[in-house]
Image 1 (cartoon, rainbow, N blue to C red):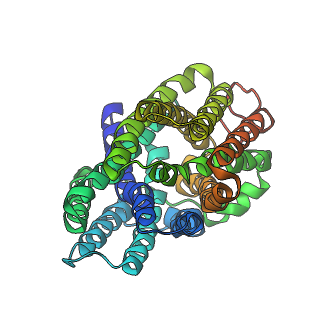
Image 2: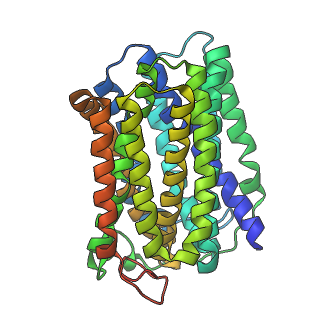
Length: 403
């Protein structure tokens, strides 16, 4: 399969994951804040993403057991994506406003389906992409995911502001169905399952250098997650309308993140995994610190938008680089399990930071909260040299990632 075809297929899959997740993580906090929920309550709502942290528990079974007819990865992706679309469309059935309890239950359900699909999608990505394609592949992956979040977060928030629940949820479900077409047309080659003995978290715990690498995965993105966990409520408390927030985050912010992801993916091969992680980590910390500046002083809409764009560019670059290094650490025959273990640690760390963000913002105020988040970004970046050492290969954990 040619590289553009691979990237096109992966783009549709990661866009499909970003679409509902964008609505539930970007639009929902704003809507909950408008309904008067407290900052800690909104922060704790991030715990509904728990399936993303626990997906490593069922990843080994998915690596071993798949459909001979539909394909090892495709046999999971296609039905799970259709079920996600069906659940979103079912939310649109009531003519009145969706009950909050049912909505939160649906968030948990979609997260479970999407997290399980992500195991198979990541395994497919590691298998499809050669080492030389992984920089661009992860740039496109992050960019496509952010396009999904633009559609599901910013655009759907604007649609909700104008039309209400039913058109918004119908649009989400229908777009997700359209994004299913590429994987429905794809024919996956037959793949032999790996031996059972080499699967699971235990292999990671025995692998030399894995502890430092896995620690980096926990630390690298936690500071940014702490900051962005309260970004939307900060904008609401600044008096911005839903349309203003939709434009700033869903339009400008995620477009900037898309460009950052593509830039990071293209630069990681030139800079090397280690140097790129170090450089982009400090850029990310500086961008988060800008939020503390705007929170400390009266700021115009233009200044808020500019800071948001800078932070999203930095985040996209850092994320694409981290994901590329994570792919390098995977064994092709155990791709879904190896990548999922790493991704779950990132999700646990960022989810915990987001869940605690409301308590931090309430205790420190928005300026102090963003300063703390920037310091955590710096701490995670300073750990990079300990977790990765120069090597002529692209193999990691850790330790064996190119400089």
